[in-house]
Image (cartoon, rainbow over all chains, first blue to last red; front, side, top):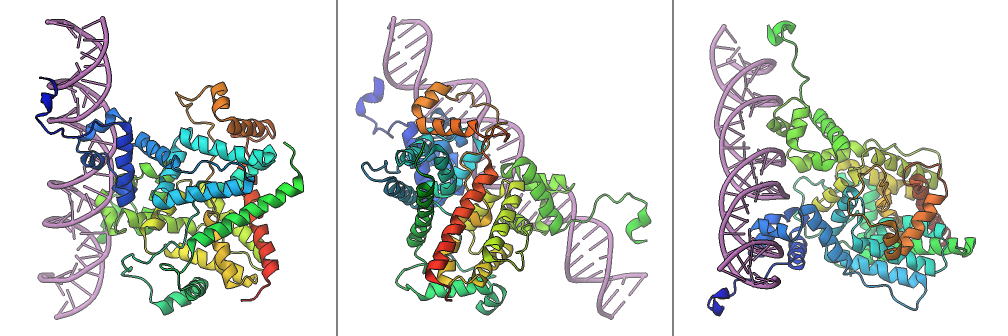
Length: 234
Length: 234
DNA sequence: GTTGACGGGTGTACGCCGTACACCTACCTT
DNA sequence: AAGGTAGGTGTACGGCGTACACCCGTCAAC
């Protein structure tokens, strides 16, 4: 009489860590990380909240697991190219991942601060990145500096201070334009200039991708110049 | 007969927005932002939780207010120096502020994402920074790029991926050194090298301040080279 | 002097959260 | 048949943000 011989329609697939993390990531993708709760994840999986705790230790460990899932989405390093191309491609791949999961930077940062060690996937990512620099002839000291220089960009995100604000409901107590211009003349000037050229770009009128690559290349060029100046001793 | 003529010991100073924000910042400084709750702030002020809501609209608005307090701690721009020195000093001042309030980057980032506009103090900071570049002869386009390049560093923090881990309770399931070295050879090599030189520096063996300035100068040098290449037309 | 508005602290209550703990059930091993 | 084990369940607790009704001291207008 076990399993009722298929009489009942099997109510759901068996839970496992992967499915829990997947549901959590999906929920965060569509509602932001603040809207993520153990109870909501359980509901999405058709399961009682406490069931999740058989697969993740607690919410923090769940967040760690989610990060690992995301870092796993980053492309592996290219083979048979110079370090600069490899780093560039890798960082851009990381950026693509983060654009798919805009809540990720915050989680990464907060988890980094709370934990003794980054998660294994992050460790592997960093290790591989260091390896790319080393293989490119960077001295160990220079790699060290380079990792710091890349800083947050290493994981693909910069602050995006001027994030796309179109499509947000207009702020009820926003300043009228003329007062805006009077109080923040430089911001206004910049915003006007950005809005003027390249009207083709939808949204903010600022090509985020271009800006990102501009910044990335500036950094990489700077590193390349340093590499040339100090030679390549290990 | 108003105010009882000092017969009762005045139980507490009257509440106001400033005192609420001050208590909130103090609490976050000593317990991290996760430990911050309206109830704890109220308790610290000897007041019932709902009293706070007469001075801040809600917790998010409180966080915004806290950011404004912090940004107000950043030194005003120096006068009568070149743009590079001015930017450098300002960014380093912002960094000092953030070292005093390590929870701030996370709050700034999360609030930036949730809000239509940054808080006024942040706006003023950004505006002033743009003004410094403009006064230094940067074209508006180049300022635009520069702001993006500075990215998170503009507000003084880089990711600090290798944050000081000394003084944290040892991770119970940390890898033994040899396995660490086998799995993450590059990280290990770098860590060893960093630990070797400059044993004078306490903590992680990595001079964060030096790394920060190294990265900052690399960026600024790159911008300076661009400035020279394109000339200074507005 | 009385009145009434009002700024600001209070008390209660609701619905959400993470999760400890005891349980129950279906399967696998022996 | 017996018992262990992995995994889903149910209940319960303490903490959170905050809506809402209240109450009291001050002060203006009459």
